[in-house]
Structure formats: structure tokens, C-alpha cells
Length: 155
DNA sequence: GCCAACGTTGGC
DNA sequence: GCCAACGTTGGC
Image 1 (cartoon, rainbow, N blue to C red):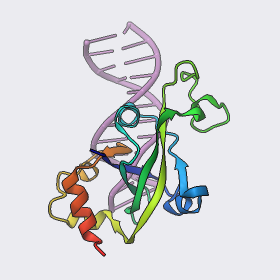
Image 2 (cartoon, rainbow, N blue to C red; image 1 turned 135 degrees about the horizontal axis):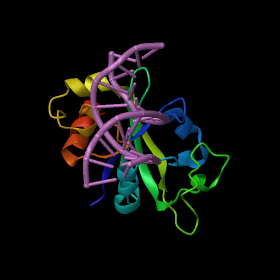
Image 3 (cartoon, rainbow, N blue to C red; image 1 turned 135 degrees about the vertical axis):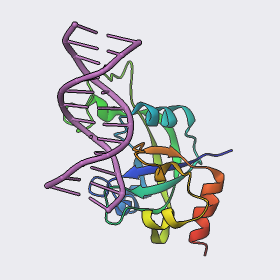
């Protein structure tokens, strides 16, 4: 069964609007430099997985909409570029340390689902995003959490 | 801008 | 393997 994920992005770095404006409304998800997040990407993400796109360090912090994984994990070549902010000299083409997927826009939540709204929603109390101190930028989402969140913006 | 929470690094 | 120091995240 296809997985469900929540991806965090700071809108000042890469926003939901940036995704929608990208060619084919698709982007590579470069720059993940945390091992736990890397493992989710490399070992568990599949084409067709659904993605909640979350704006962190934003006002307000919110889930902006839904995207989908359209390319399976491949080496994050930004790690090999000394000019990149994501450069990591310990990652090489022969032995890549970091991986990314491509995601494509699917639809908006209108309005976005703010962190405050998520916190008020019954059934989401154990969602990883809402746990104190959880900084993980790639998080698995349960089917139940997904259904509850979709229900907040059912057409 | 503050600061708590967390992950990583590196000396020992 | 321990753990202090440091850097980063991210809500507020």
C-alpha cells in the first residue's frame, strides 16, 4: 500500500507556491540532512505515496496542500556541489550519503490547515508533527491521520 | 529575537 | 562509550 508522508519546508527557502510554479509542478526534495529522514526517503518512499506539504517557520505554520511522490529515491547530488548550501564533503557519487525524491503538486487545502487547527482536531493528538520537540522534516502519517486531515477540507 | 529541544561532533 | 559543547530547528 502506498505510504503517506508529511514534508516540512520553510517557505522562505522553498514554498508551496514555488512548487506550483515549478516546471511540471514538480521538484526534487533536496537538502534533507538528517539520518532518520534520509532513511524514510531512501528505504520507504515510493512512487504514488501521498505527501502533506507543511510550511514550518511560517506565519502561520500550516499544511498547504497535497503532493505526490513521482520519482523514487536517488542520490542528492547537491551534496557534491561545494557551491551548494547542502554541500557535504562526506557524500560522494561513489558512496552517496543523502537521497531525495521528486514530488508533484496535487491540490490545495483552502484555506491551509494551520498548526493551531491541527492541535484542536480530535484524533490527531498522537500525530508526530504535534509532539513536543519533534523536528523531523520527513514524517510518516497514518491512514487514520490522513483521513481526519482530509475530512477537515472535504469538498 | 528568544529559547527549549534535539542531533551531531569530537575529546577523552 | 560517555558526555559536554555546539549548531540547528521551529514555535512563539
